[in-house]
Length: 177
Image 1 (cartoon, rainbow, N blue to C red):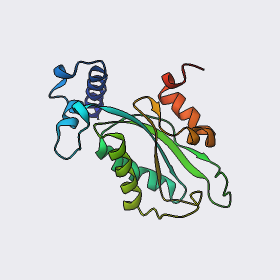
Image 2: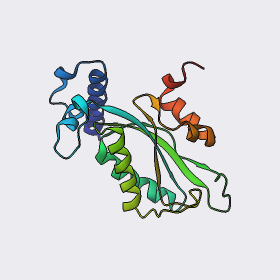
Image 3: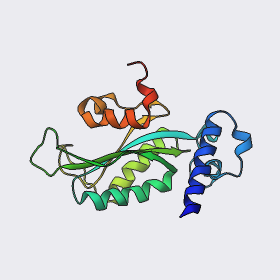
Image 4: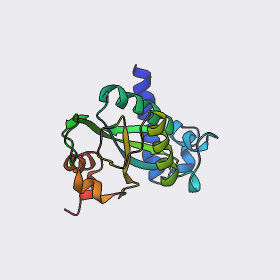
């Protein structure tokens, strides 16, 4: 167990150093190696991107959130995460409560590729497309921020708990307030 924590600490340190421009010194670390592997599509200059990903489910939510986390960890290095909380459904209220949480993912995938991979995870887990996007779902994965920029402001406005998630994981985004 201690080894996992140690490796995780090295990954976080490597990520911070790469973000500060010490990329050349980081060759050989797991965070840098992530960008050098053949099974991960690279972005410009092997940049490590940071995405805040929202996870939600109201069909067997505990099981499906755990399954989604197992898929997501293959896309990069998972960083801090929020607590997962139950929230009431909005708009279409005749359904079970949602289990929602968010995490930071450090990845070499560019935004568009990460979006495609998250949608593929949803499909692989059995999510069905439906005209009413507010119906029960096995899993919902959304990118809320990417490299410190809000990807979809309407989600933050529509989902009150989401503002708290962003503020908890990336408080610098709201420094102007």
